[in-house]
Every structure is written in structure tokens, then in C-alpha cells.
Amino acid sequence: MADQNLQLTDGDKIGVIGGGPAGSFFSIFVLDMAFRLGMDIHVDIYEPRDFTIPGPTACNMCGGIISESLVQNLATEGIILPPTVVQRGIDSYMMHMDTGDVRINTPLNEKRIAAVYRGSGPRDIKEIKWGSFDGHLQSLAMEKGANVLQKRVNQVEWIDGKPQVNVRGDPLQAYDLLVFATGVNSKTMRLIKDLDLSYKPPKTTKTYIREYFLGEEKIAKNLGTSMHVFLLDIPRLDFAAIIPKGDYATVCMLGEEIDKELVDSFMSAPEVQQVFPPDWRMDEVSCFCAPRISMDSAFQPFSDRIVFIGDIGVTRLYKDGIGAAYRTSKAAATTAVFQGISKEDFQQYYWPTCQTIENDNRIGKIIFLVTHLIQKLRFARRAVLRMTAREQNTEGAQPRMSMVLWDTFTGSAPYRDIFLRTLHPAFLGRLFGDLAVSIFKVK
Image 1 (cartoon, one colour):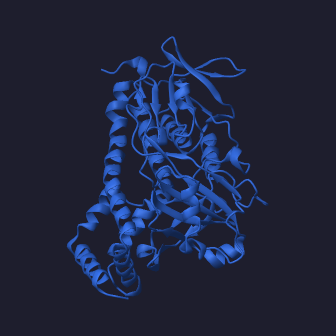
Image 2 (tube, helix red, strand yellow):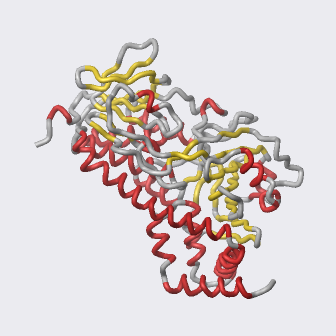
Image 3 (cartoon, one colour):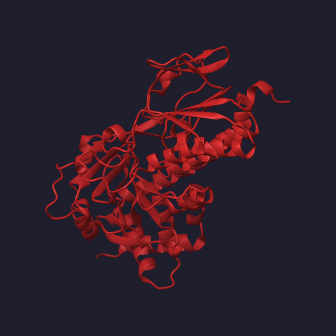
């Protein structure tokens, strides 16, 4: 039988450190589930940033793409994204390579994705025209009853068997359950040093995000409603994209410890230059950051009365981090309300969700190794372009490569599903045929 002292009961308090998507999702779910059981619990969210203001102080360092599958999942939870939060609906991808370009339209006219800002926009914003995605989720958590404290946690320690939160100038706060939802760019390890946990954070790598102000007219003319992705033979670059958002274009680069040399090499590429207006200048940057992203799962992201969710627990490799935050936060909330808050409860009911994501990431790493190989081989790039263009330009054609690329770029499907599609005989037959043509045909 479970230890009754390690189960949530009426009047218990939960502290959530971090008010980004994972922290807000968890608060929404745990309060809603407790309400349905007739249980009154108190939730405090500690988040020092104010997502209603633009610039670095309210930034959450994100490329800001939300897949249609996640939008639909959120809608079933009653979480609707208003037009004021979605800067631009993305209805196609433009894939750019040195061998040519191809537009990949929304498969089956269903998988539309949304471009959002996590805060209220870049630091040089002239006029706030939209709302913050993170701020919207936080307001929904507050509507459910969460108390948002715009304060920074300085220390966490055990006192009388419960985690205690120390905020400068405030008395210690004891919680029955403490949730870490801080992301991998925070000082979490400093906070938990006195807790004597087995937890070890995920391995990370540095990425790069840059914002350019172009104005709505130039965005519509040059980028349109497409997300522009680049498969270029640039060392250490795994993936790069330019995303239209309102008046701005967001450049997002993923790879191995991205530095200035790699950024300059990408931004100077002809394929990138052609996407921007003729009067655009590379050095006129509105905002930039170099956040770290996790590359695997944390070790034992739970203990008695403590659980780690979102990026600091486990997230999807390169894609759909917000979707992973949704899944891990819901699993943690479900465990806490219906099962218990002991280490054993989280091990049995929360950890399987983390393992599912991590196992899928292992397949994702294989997919990105193949993608990296394609980037290296010109004939392979020509074959992928040829196969995709034929699918997009032939009425009634099965979009096999297009679907694989779409779901790889958006994170709309598990990597396992994508990988299995590439093993279909029809996919392999067409790909090998186009590879042969690309090797032997001289343009």
C-alpha cells in the first residue's frame, strides 16, 4: 500500500519553479484534476520574467513553432491559441539546397503549423501587436487558481522532510511537492545542491537564434506563409530555418556547438541571401541568443516530493519541445494526483512517458545522421530534391518523401513513425531510382 504521507491531500501546497510551458501546463493539469476530485490544493509558480514585455528580460529562447498535432491536443484540453498569440500560420515549407528549391505544401491540407513568440517579441519591437505564448499559458494557469510569483528562487533545501523554497526577502515556503520546470539554460543544479538527489541533468549543445525586423510587407513578399529550411553542406550544421513571425524573420540554427564562424558561414550562403529582401543587411540584427538545448534525458528526474519536467527532464530531439513539455507535465500531474508523490510513484507512472520520448529520440538521432549524410553528398541532395519536386508537381502522387520531410521538420510525428515510412518498399524504390539518376545523369 502507498504511503499516505506521500500522497496529495486536501489543502496541500505545490511549488513550481519555472513558468514556461512545462510549468504552466503542469499547473493547469494538476489544478483541473484536483478540482474534479473535489480536492483543494494550492499551486505557486515562481517565474521572475514578465512575458508581457518584449526583449531579453521576457524571452524564453525558442524558435517558436507549434505543430498542428500539438494544437489539436491542446484544443482537446480546452487550451485554445487565440489569433493574438499566433503570429503567422505556416502552410508550407520551402526547402533550400545548393541543388535547387522545392515547396512542400501541407500534407493532406491538414498539418498546418503555427509560429509564435514565447515572450512578446524582440527587444527592438516598435509596437506590440501580439501576445506571448508563454504568457497565455501562464494566464490560463492563473484562471485555474495558480498563484504566479514574479520572483527568483535562490535556494531549495529539505526541512522536516519537505522541500523548502527560499526567495530573498521572503520567509521560507514549505511544499508537499516541488516541481522543477526551469529548462536547461537555468541554474537548476545550483538550486538542488543541498537536496542530495540522484538527478543528473541532460547533456546539452549550443544553438543560435537571431531576429531580423523586415516589416509585414517584406515578410509577406519574401517569406510568405512558408517556413524556409536549409539542407546545406556546412560542417557542424544539422538544421537551419528561417521562420516568418509578424514583422520579423527568426533565424534558427541547430548543430554542434554553434559559434560565430558557423553563423557567418550560414548567413553568407547564397541560398540564405536569396530569401531576404535585396536591401537586407546581415549586421542589422534586432535580437539574438545562443541557448542550450538538451540532447538526451536526465538521469532519474524524480524523487520523493520532487519531479523534473520539460527540457530539464526529457524533451524531443531538436523538434517539438513544447509538445514534450505538454506530455511530461501531464504525466507528472496525473501521477501526483491519482497515484502519489513518492519516488516509486514517479518511477512507475511518470518515468515511462520520459522513456518513450527518449527511445524515440534514439531513432531521431539515426534520422539526423542520415540527413547529415545527405547534406554531405551532392548527388543525394539532388535525389531528394528530384523525388520531392515530382511528388509536389504530380497530381495524385503519394507524397512519401514530402511527408517524411514535413514531419521531420515540424516534429508532428514520432521519429519512429518517420523511420518506418522510409522502409516502405515504394519509398525505397523511388529513392534508389532518383539516386541512380542523380549519380549518372549529367545536368
